[in-house]
Length: 107
Image (cartoon, rainbow, N blue to C red):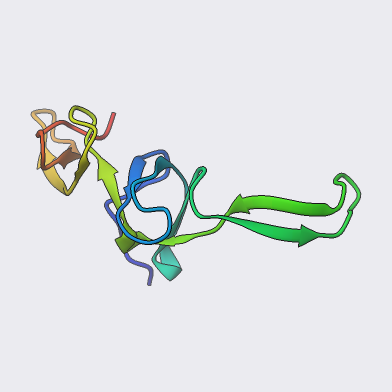
């Protein structure tokens, strides 16, 4: 069974290690089975593709996946990498909270 992660699709994350260290972007996809994420505009690779029905062939640049341990959620207030905790609101909902500022990450 795949694990549950504190990073979700749509979150803004910062890369903490590797070639793209310091870059940030929005999470496009979380691959839970492999513990990886795809971040918009980060870890770009070139792929040689054949022409198909709707697309021309050529060299296409697209995002490759990153290990989930190499990214951290950006704090919405301070715009710095932060850890994530959980908290229950008055109405009983369980939400994610940025440890740095205490700001709620879920809408």
